[in-house]
Every structure is written in structure tokens, then in C-alpha cells.
Amino acid sequence: MQSAPLGTTGLDVTRIVAGAPRAPLPVARGVDALGEAWDQVGVRAVDVTDLAAEGETAAERFLQERQPDDAVVLAGLGGTAGPERGADHSPARISRALEAASRRLGRVDLGWLAGADAATPLPETLALLASAIEDGRLRAWGAAGVDVWRLEALLTAADREGVPRPAFVRNRMNLLERGDERDLMPLAVGEGLGVLPRNPFASGRLTDRHVAAEEAAERAAAAGAPRTTATDPALPALLVLRDLARDRDTSTAALALAWLAGHASDPRPVVAATSQAVWETVHAALELDVDDELRERMSSVR
Image: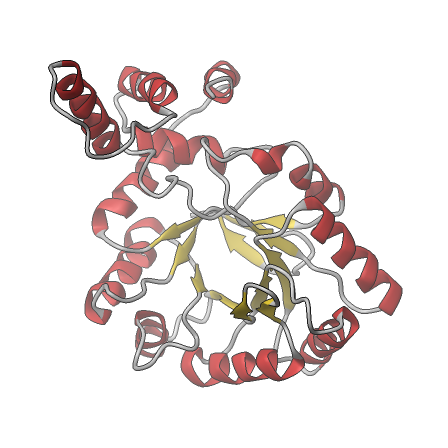
């Protein structure tokens, strides 16, 4: 799999990033899923969100056993602090996360902070990140789950403090969740930031299984059977996407991932490593030729 520079991180990252498996998936199965990503697809980047998990995790066992020198390790560094404060981006919390990453993963190359912390002054957070980059604990940092206003605030504050800016954004983005396309993505790309879209299959909605289940439920409802769940409001769009996929002898999930991977923002989608089937979908997506006409048809589906 090809690698290319990710924003201003100074690192080459493969076209797909493996989202490290988490509980309740057994650790052994998670390790196998990461191995399939490495061996069958050529992924060389792993994104870890469970640094504070109790017990061994799939990511730490995989990295300790395989010790891949060419892997790029990403990890979430902040914590949650409740509805009023939001996130915990305090220097103490980030320092503990960096220590955990070093101990459990061997290192962390790219760290990301999700949301915003209403209690910690932003200069304190930025100073800790700058110190971690200066002493080699971190190569670069990024923002996750942010809107355009938050990203602008982070960029402005970093420039004002004279410290490293966020080098990438890590947000939800897929064919059904495209709110960032209008404002946040143009800002990120214009500022040279890398883009790491997560949840490329919209929590399973962009899959043939989901579309078939919705169709079956609608037929049953038309025949008089009560629906136990609400109809997916995107069902008309999903049916169009499934038909487009069938015309190309592929799956809805593969087509959706191909659209995302070929986005103008040059993203590196984060795909959850859960099974071999996921990597078969990734492989199919990377083999697809999404020309301008197909991309336009897919992008027009709402």
C-alpha cells in the first residue's frame, strides 16, 4: 500500500489507518485483525483509543510481538471530564497518556485531542504538547471531533503562543456524514493539515447487510407487520448507493470507502480492525476506479 506525507506531521502514512480493536473483541482476535491489515492490505499505521484500558490490549500485544519499525502509531491523549467540562486536556492528563503510550505501545508518533476542555487554559495544553514534541515524546499532534470554530481557535492560539500547530484533524466523515465538507475540510486543507476521517461505514449503515435489513423491514411493514425500529432516514440514498455498487460488482461498503479514500482532502480513513472481512472490503475499495462521473453521482446522493 502506498504511503504519502500526512499534512505537516513530517511522517508518511499509508492510505488506510487501522483503528486498533477494543473490548469486547477478544485480544487474540484483535491481534489477528491487525496482522491481516499488515500482511494482506499493507497497512502501516494504527490508531489507538484505549490507552487507559485495564489489562492488555490488542494494539500493545501486536506492536510488542511484531515490533514493526515502519509503523506509525497514533493515540488519543486526552480524557473525558463530564458534560460541563467536556474533555480533560490538562498537562497532567496528557503526560500520563504519553507515559502510558510509551509503556504499552513502545511509543506514540501522533497524538490527538478530542473535543475541548472548558477548565484547562489552552496555552497550558499547547505548552505541554510543544514540550513533548521538543523532547521527542511526540512527533506532532492533532485535533479530533472538532468543528471549524474550534480548529480556527487552535490554529490561532498556537500561532500566538509560538508553538507547534495541530498537524491533522480526526473527525467522523463518510457518505452519510458530510457536514465537515463545507467549512472544516477547506480550512484544514488550506492550512496544510492532514485529514483522518473515522467511521467510514457510518456505524454499519453503509453496508449491504444494513440495506437488506432495512428493505426487509419495510416490506414487512407494508404487509402489516409492526416495525420495532425506526426506518433509516437515509434508506433512499442507501438504495441508490447499493445499486451503484452492484453495477460495479462490488459492495456498498467498498464503494463508500473508495469515495472517501479518493476525496479531494487526501484523507487517510481510519478503519476499525475487527475481522478479515473488513480488510477484504478495504482491498476491494482500493482496487476500485472511482472516476469523476461516479464520484459526482455518489456525492449527489443525500
